[in-house]
Image (cartoon, rainbow, N blue to C red; front, side):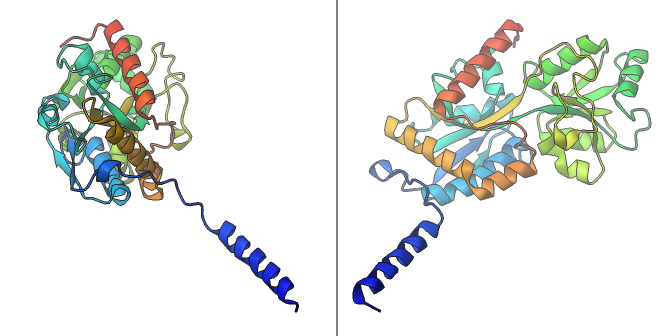
Length: 328
């Protein structure tokens, strides 16, 4: 073989090998070495719930991107308010972020907090947008389906106890009220600040029903301790094709969604904000985190939003709740 021919073949084989490699994701340079020490992720809700599960899944994925530990700290209380004091008291250097949900918008719209969640603090990443469902115990013969649930509620006004969150201005409470008005029923809502207490109340028979998102109670569905009888979405998602939705029951109100994201302070230096936005997006896109999202049914709605998209989502949510007259 001629020498030139040999090198041409070698070059071709080298190029083939290079282009056969998986594409290397764009890596953003750390701004002045940030972060170079452990970060803190505050979760203003209790352990075991959807926010806690999301935060821990994101922290694990984020650590691999930023190269430092990310410590998750639960600060439950006040329907998401208690943990915010620690968040706002921390130095605005980007080392402390908080997981929060659409309650940030309702708390601001109702005047419970003064800090605007689309200006004073805002999401660097919206990680989940989820629909809700109404759950009952599979062995509760009173409620084989939604029609039976409504019939019983109409015959026994206020007798059905529904486990729900404590914040009266929350998405859960507002949607429950809309559902009651639309269906002509009256339920008794029982407040629980911790998710585990809500779930245990239904499984233990202390309440009759539960308002929750499917990803948060998937283990209970798989163990046959809970079953959904209504999906609060206009169309039936494929994963719950056997469960009636709003269109099926002739509902006339617009469904509201739970969203969860990771917030930063406006005073965090801009270069660190952009880095955190990139890092959270990279962690969100990781195979590990997407596996978690699929397990929680969070792939059924296109969820991811960056800083600008997150601000728009929060602003629209604040406006929606203000129009509904949400109060403290």
